[in-house]
Image (cartoon, rainbow, N blue to C red; front, side, top):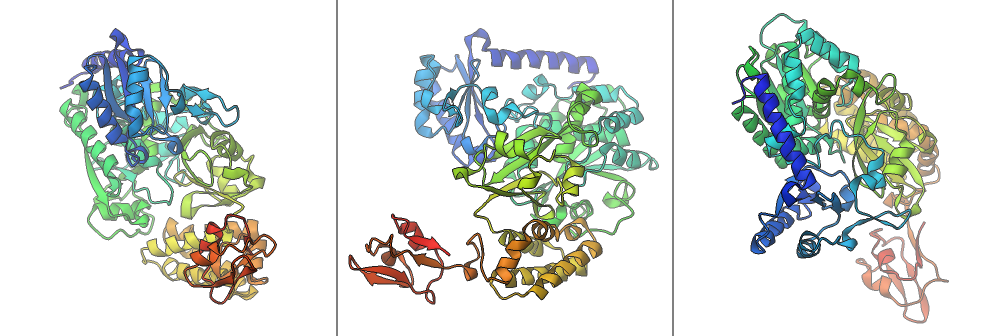
Length: 621
């Protein structure tokens, strides 16, 4: 048990030396680390690790090399990853069959396995070091500190990487000074609202003494978002430390992690981290010999998107149906069990230890005037480098998409990026040089949200995109207020009419009016932002809506009811392959004699014909 600041400092120094020794290969011992994030684990990272351990034992190398897992490396489209220390060699797309070769060539022979290195698409040069890969060059890891370098299930590695230095500093300060440090850093909530974190803490601190709570919102529900999950999987102790600091600052003794049950790896590692912190006295009674006590608890969410809204989340923790409460009173005044409660998301709490450890000025040197620090994004969709990125606020969308994301596959034209998930909006090519921060994205008709960033290219239909998000919102509406419960369904009906060629311009007018009504009249942020995907796509792609309504045509050839497949007779080789693949017999012709044609009445637009044609004779119209 660590009972004093001096003991903690001594242990941290010892752990730091061991961790540094591992990275340097002290004593001639090398280290193999594998990505243990959900993405790589789904691609057999755990089995690869087991095979490494087995072969190393069989070859009698256990005293010369160690094998363990770390958090997400971020470059998901290139996983699974294996890194070798002390050389810092990074191998990507490693399969089970590659394990023996890595051991024989690299571990035993000291030779780099060339075919497993990343190849820079611009130079076609092989890159052996992670920091030399373009994907990583413009990133700054603050919230993702430790992810990809330390074992998330080993508290000693976390301590060696700076864990609990921020807490030790905070416990020596007055509570109000801790809050001021967070306030002066400029940290704003990373869950979507962007409310100043220090100010939220001030509200709770100002409430009369008594039971107070800290809640970590880990209910990450946006389609394509995996930021919070990756932080909890890669360095859960950073989030725990942030929660403890928040608890000390406002005078709370209990904290709750609310994490969706669909994140079993994150939940398991969080449980391990809490247990390890309790075992050495960094959670529990009289932390580091002070009069401050704090305990952390876990509650699992059932996957309701609305529980990402803080008051619905609090109801869920209390065992009630996850539905939002009217505000005011705000949770900082009357929250969990009617006690003052601060709700911060995972990324926000992960930034807190960094600020306390490094100081407010170090954090504030990144970012823009009103949006300090960094932001983690889950970059996905039509992008070459799918993955998890953390960039300074003020980074432009162009840098995010082209420098870090590597551009659009197949050199197709960029069309839009949806930021903020279902609550956000679409930004287009004219916005590419916009610096990313809370205020700029809102001014452009979108929002930061929790950090989902879905890239779309010329093949995406923006009306269909709006319809997709509206279907999601309809499914996830809790039904408490009429504007959201009924209004979103009506909006979906209008969008369905448009995508099936049954709408007129009056329907478009009604859709816009309805969007404004829902935005103004809904109870919580889910309803208030439900219309954003529609309004933002209408603002930038109104011609696409008109094409669906007036011309009965989907320019992107996505909406099936407005699309048809035709065979170009000049390109048709009369081979009958398309006819043989058609599941409904809609294609007729005569082999080697008459070009084949598609009966539009029978065609179900399944795409089997266009996939089977080797000559590009079938076209979408």
